[in-house]
Structure formats: C-alpha cells, structure tokens
Image (tube, rainbow, N blue to C red):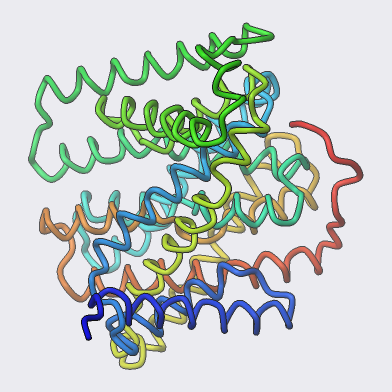
Length: 392
C-alpha cells in the first residue's frame, strides 16, 4: 500500500491546529495563538512533523498578501488620505525614536552604527498580519484606534524598502542603479494608482458582468486581481503586500467586493494559518530554555518600549491618552518583516549567530504574547467595541 509521504505530516498538522483551536475557543482566545503554538509543536523544536520552515514561510507570505487585499477592500481611500499625518509623521518618529533607544544600549556595548540601525529597524516594525486580523475579528478595523494602526502599518510596509537600502549602504554594499530605478518607479506607480482610486467614485473592471455569473471564473479572476498587482509591485522592488492592498482598494471602488470576498475567503483562512504556523516553527525551545532570562527581559522590554513610544507619538498628534495607549498596545509586538531584516543582518555579518537566534526568539515570542498584551490593555483602558459599523 502506497501512502504519499506528505499525507501523514499533513494529518498531524491539521489535527494539532484543530485541537488547539477547540481549546482556545473554550477560553475565548484568538485562533492565531493556536497557529503559533501549533508551529512550535509540529516544527523542528517539537514533534518534527514539518521541518521545511522556508516552504511554510513562503506559503505564509501568500497569507499576508491575501490579508492586505481584503483590508484594501474594506477601507475608505478618502479617510486614509486625510490621515497622512499619522502615517508619515507617526511612523517616521517611531522609527527614529526606536533607533535612538537601541543606540543607548549600543553605546554601552560598543555596537557599530549599522548594527544599531538594523536592530532599531527590527523593533520599530509591527505585525501587519497579527494586528489586522485581531482588529478584523473584533470588528475594530473602523474604530479610531483601528484607523491609526492601519495607517501606521501601511507606512511601515512602505518603509521596508528604504530600510533595506539603508542597511546595504551602511554595511558597505551599494544597490545597483537599476534596482533603485525600479523601486522609484514602483513607488510612483503605487502612488498614482492610489490617487486614481481616491479621485474616482466608481471604477469599472473589465469583464466584471460576465465573471459575476460564473463562480469558477470568479475565483481565478479574484486571484488574478490580488496577485497580479502584488507581483507587479514586487517586481518593481516594493512590498507585494502593498500591491495587494492597492488592488483591494480598486476592487472596492469597482463595487465588486461581494463575489471577490466570497471567492477568496477560504484561501485567506488557510494561508494566514500557515503564516502563523511558520512563525511558531521558528521558535527554538532549546535556545529559549537556555537563555530564558535574557529572552523574557527583552520581550517585556520591547512590548513596554514600543507601547510607550507609540502612545507618546499618537498623543502628540492629537489623540486622547486612552486611544493613544490602546493603539500603541496594538503596535507593541515586532512584525513578520523583521524576520527579513534579521536574516539580512545575519547574511551581511552585521549580527552573528547568537544575536540572530536571540532576535528571532524575541520577535516570535512578542508575536505569541501580543493578543494577551492587547487584551489586557483593552481591559485596563476600558476600551469598548465600536459604537457602530461604518467604513473608515
């Protein structure tokens, strides 16, 4: 009897995720915690049902793309345009203050400038996938805090490219002229598409009427819309997730969100789950057990520091202390794109093996603890559900 070698680990993965999901449902905890814990259990540090972390990471990246596409369909471009101060000033201030905080530590430990900048970038990025999923599940995406957080997360996604360029320059490697031109062209295209969407009340998609009558064609059309623009922006040196977000805005302006949402929802659930599973698989339990004191101190320090920094910035931009603190708690964790920055730092020799493992452990645990941190902040600040459901 022949059994495909992929079937046993697949059964084990699904069983672990389902069992943890049922347990977390009993205690009314978000499912993404179960995905991360499942990644620890089935990954290299656990039962070793799956060991190809890179494959799961790539599949998880598809989940981020789909999530940004769905968010793009649900937000108002006009409100985003009015909130540019939070996006630009808030994000830039956050990055600079994060670098300054790391510089204080680096001065005592004699770190190089490029190492300080790299780690400052790492802790300044929040998790688009974690935060937006939590906001979406709790119907808070259209709240004031949700608006703030969405603007900052989008700005952070845009900031990835200049961050990578800055790290390359500081480490002594200069990006080619062709690469810089592609990235500049990509930025112009994304801005032009966003402006076009904002200035139009209605956009007509080609073949929309015919596609609406055929469910199978709807699935492939929706995938083409989402991944087509994601591929386009990625090819131009920008974030693929950013292209997916703009694609979602275009679909929303075309008023075709019903069939697109219905067609892609199952794909989003699967791939978002894989994203969080891949994060759990990166957690090295042996390393954490050996250096648990340092890891715990750094995770708590990151959550407190990021909350404090973001709260001060948002309060300075005019929000109340309650909204500022809750928004800051939502942004307290370190994001999935920080894994990319850490990998670049390792490959460039900016950080060594121990520092890389410590960075990965802190990022992963901050993601794991993020839902509890946000829930506790919500209770302490007495933040209630949004008064009504409306677009941003």
